[in-house]
Length: 252
Image (cartoon, rainbow, N blue to C red; front, top):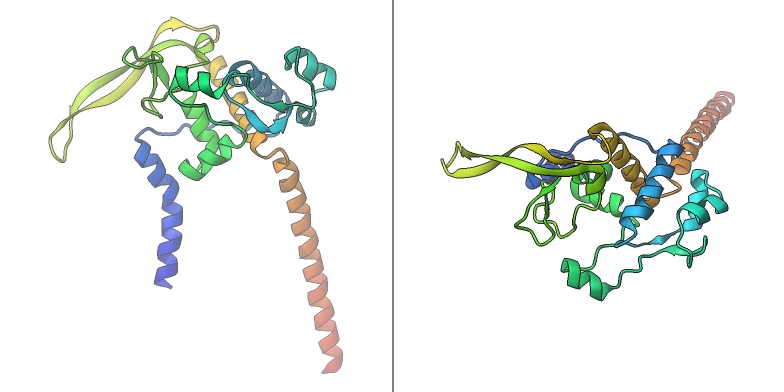
């Protein structure tokens, strides 16, 4: 029993341990999994800003019809002239060029939310925090850095929307070994973006909602059917229990 309790405690603490190892708190991502307008906007942001470098080879453009978009809307707003609605979401960036520009090929984003969930406990929260934690850093090859993902190779592709920010740090003394370390204090805006802070956060929430949906498009249907299955099984269990009681009553 003690061994079982230790296993349960470890599983409960895993998300917290993942967060502690990164050293930067995760912000809670708004839940927009059932908001079709938000998911459509997230799909638009994904195609315009992410698909230039990243692929999503497990997703076809035609699947966006599940979000309420028609073939004409997909073709007119989300496709290049050479692409078709039934095509996979692939990037035209070659692996060779990606390695030359960024040092490594950008990962496929088909299941990025589920991947980050296994690492940090919450994929949407990780992505939401990550996309809002960029700051200008001239010491980096791309000119950008990230508080959640230090020394990240990916540049800040949404900088025109958010604007250019710098991070302010303060030297503090560690209370345990009295060593000096730099502690993050706040972000300071250098150049405003096209969006206000609230508007940018909202767009990022839409993009994260889409990335989460893309990892499992049937998630909402699965959950909805799961509720009805549990209700049906409960009714069958109740019926079986009463039939069993009635049968043994006659036997006695």
